[in-house]
Image (tube, rainbow, N blue to C red; front, side, top):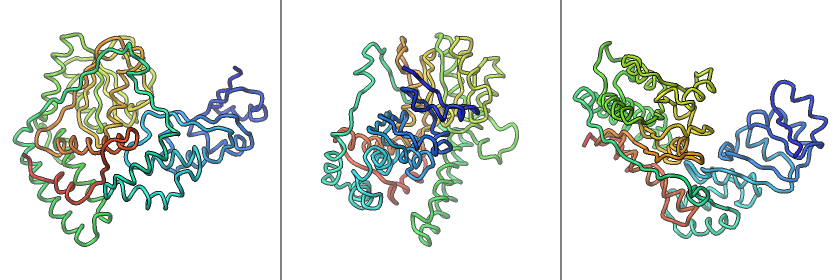
Length: 388
């Protein structure tokens, strides 16, 4: 095939000859900027890889993708549904505009009855609507040579300082939230809810993440557990990917590794030599790779690793699974172990339970399985419950 990779500052040199190529490759970031030229070209097929990138239908990339002309459109994605049904609507609005109605009618006919009310009839109707247009392939179906993957929850008991701070924060935030929800309702209290949940999650990781702890505070229970685990894993010759949502937590872990003279690679949004870090780990020179979930949750092939550790849980099981699959992918020839460090009785354990609801929503649409989920007052109360 005659292939054009349309990127870089000199890509405009090729605009006049687009029709001479069989295949044109570009990025979501460049698509809106190059739309005037790409939009003038009619393509036989338009393929979106990692199509969940356009899950926000009002993003520049989504608007530009929908403006291109093609005889056939395809979406490739491992996560067609991450948070809510509106993301699925966005993909179908690109694939077949109007197939699921406009956004307002879709919310009325499907999102609200399914996510809020658990209506099985509307779910069945939506499944019947999208099923003929979806081709699903599981990894185990197309890569039967893959070794087994084991998933393990490593329970952590918070230390006394963490438990005291957790309960003090929980009580303070609970009082503020009840008052604000009374005045502004659940939707109007979203930012305060997120702040409360964030701070409780930080306590579970390490008190230093709060930014107001005195110098010299003892390491968190979870950090101590991690270091003990790493001693055992390295003794067995294991290679580790460690994920956290908090770049500041990765810095604390990095500091502990330096004290122990353990070399490591690190990838966050601030990493400049991204490829060098990846290559150093893949070459077998380093036993552990510290990765922020946002910077490294997709698009990496790290089959040199045989162990994945999630230091803190994320709401979305699909995002965690994508991160784990940096190691568990075609080319992996060793059994893979995925550990989740969960502070027992805390908000982290409750997040684990909510993850199951999110997985059920995706499964319900993709497989016709069980039902939906949306955060309501009862579940918020569960998240802010005292330590068990």
